[in-house]
Image (cartoon, rainbow, N blue to C red; front, side, top):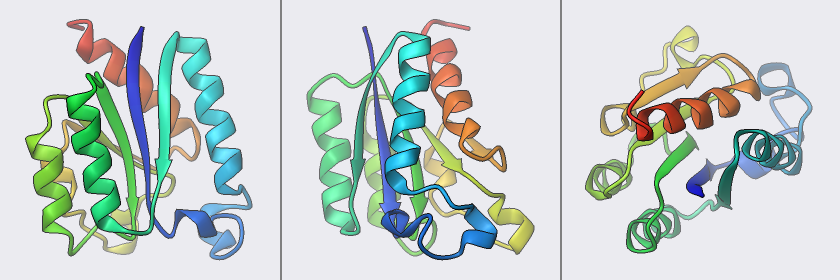
Length: 144
């Protein structure tokens, strides 16, 4: 079975608790429930991880590399800019990573410094962006 690592970056634990006008009322646990549902529908195993500590996120990517993860999705959130070590780690692992954003950071003038290390970026589709990310990773991994 295909294994996908899903990483929630810094501040994602505050979803549904602050900035509701931008990101909506869903809590991080709601995100996880949707992601697990999408994974089940697509026949994928997911390992969902969140940390507000950059080094822990980097270690999770390296662990995924060592344990044979097939692909990853990351919503870098607070790690979107100013975290070159994370971008380097994403570039070093042996699986494709896709950056996911619930909203569209570019609409607010944001430019991701993580995106160049990723195979692709999905923004502005809300929670459904995770479904698109899993499906896209599957297609890429299956040669499509």
